[in-house]
Amino acid sequence: MTERKVVIPGEAIVTGEDYLPGKGTEKRGNEIVATMFGLAEEINKLVKVIPLSGGYEPRRGNVIIGRVEMLTHNGWVMDFGNAENAFLSLMEVPRFVDKGALDEVMDIGDMVVVKIYSIKGRSIDVTIKERGLGKIEEGIIFKINPNKVPRVIGKEGSMIKIIKDETGCNITVGQNGFIWIKGDKIENELLAKKAIIFIVEKSFIEGLTEEVEKFFKGEKK
Amino acid sequence: MTEFKRPDGRKEDELREMKAKVGIIPNADGSAMYQSGNTIAIAAVYGPKKMHPQHKQDPKRGVLRCTYNMNSFSVSERIRPGPSRRSTEISKIIEWSLEPVLDLDRFPNTVIDVHINIIQADAGTRCAGINAASMALAHAGIPMRDLILSIAAGKLDKTIVIDVNKAEEDFKEGEGSTDIPISMTSSGEITHLQLDGKINSKQLKKAIEMARKSSKEIYEVQKKALKESVNLE
Image 1: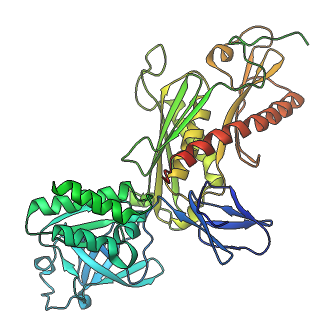
Image 2 (image 1 turned 90 degrees about the vertical axis):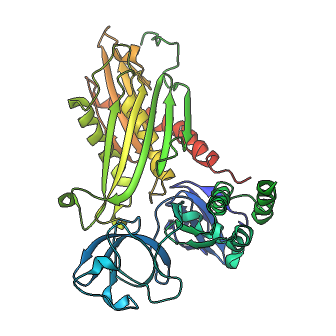
Image 3 (image 1 turned 90 degrees about the horizontal axis):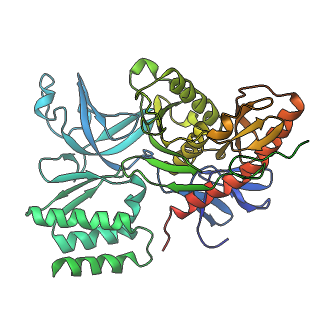
């Protein structure tokens, strides 16, 4: 099997003893069976299914965008579109915070760019002690399917670089599917949003980079 | 055995014309439509999302919550909208028939909401609902061991038939009609079986065997719909 193919749950992907079941698959007898709807792929005898839908799975090191849901005595509880909440501790904020007035730094409803630094069991701890992280003051935020995030970013950030160069906006893509765009003009921000939605809709097209360049040429006329 | 003729002229093991489409509700995480003859069911899946109220959360595994609803215009005589004794029961039945193939252990404290709406009814609505829900769950990216296929077998007088419609369900002659909705995985493991009427064990075995055979056809329809929903061009 060389090409990617669409598989449905319960469908046998490959037959043979020398294959290993990866993500979204399981071994039944001498067949590797898909347990998820998506694209099946085989690399070095490892078979896996790339999901096309479904939620975001938090991983260490991911940059995500969340909303402050609750204040506690030593930090902020954040919702990032998952069933589990993330916790931003006071210690992970690179400035002095008055313990009695946490809401002066970040209040309920504020959107924050954070990075996951540890996942222990079900508790997810995040930090804003890095460049580019912190509370979002202005711009627009919208959500896309988290499975399309790799396409929006492109290989080593190539796709997002095109959009940044074309629109002159600052774009932060959270791995959980939230995207923050900040530009000097609202027209540029909306163009960047339109381009990202274009990528999400055409995410399977081969030569997507050229298509996006064409899209910008069409838009600029 | 006397020659038995079905009201719409189908063969005993002939299914009604089937249609399926995946991804019909843009706002849902997964959605599907399944049509069998004049019965049309649509299903939407939301989740896994946080379970509210919190006391219903299960820290060990996720919860599947189905809501079956028949729209008031789905039958010729308008039915009262809102949940009824019948729809609550069918919702529970659908939950039980889908749960065995779902891997809910991976989503503790969450709920997966499945909303099934019958927009046109001509018997076999729970089966159509289960078929639609099974496709919608796969479309939503929920880990599943297999797809669920559902079909209503029936006994009209002394003849076993497959995919009963409303005219046949109301059949009164001879021994009358027996309705047997069956749900199974594509490998033929039964997850749900109901029986309304009278039947002997030999005939029931025959009915299950026939349902098993017909489920292959439904599987092909579901498979085609799911694969066509991905546009690789």
